[in-house]
Image 1 (tube, rainbow, N blue to C red):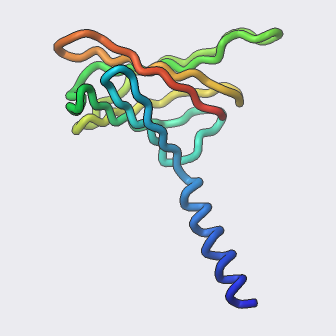
Image 2 (image 1 turned 30 degrees about the vertical axis):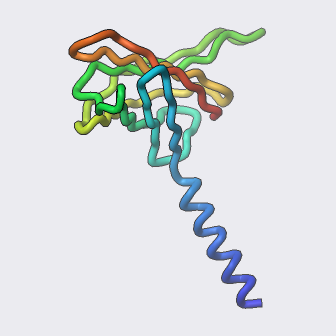
Image 3 (image 1 turned 45 degrees about the vertical axis):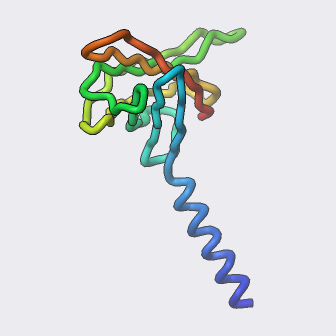
Length: 127
């Protein structure tokens, strides 16, 4: 009986540790963005850290912005939130976005490099 209690306790501990964060890797033609959050995503404000690489090179103080949106549906208008990201160094950017209700939200990450063409990386999340 003690062994079963121990196994259940360890399982619950690891489940709670894994459920405490959000991670998702998104790829476009030649860019890779890793989205992560220290806390599970919720309705309301959420802080993401974006780790951006283009052609295998870390993004270096580029202008990055994020738009999250939910298209209009019958009886409900479209919703969106736009935010500029803060450069943290070493290809990392921090941005706060607002999910005003539960459901599937589209995420568009816009990157304007110092040199070269602007690009966009798209994904979605369920809240």
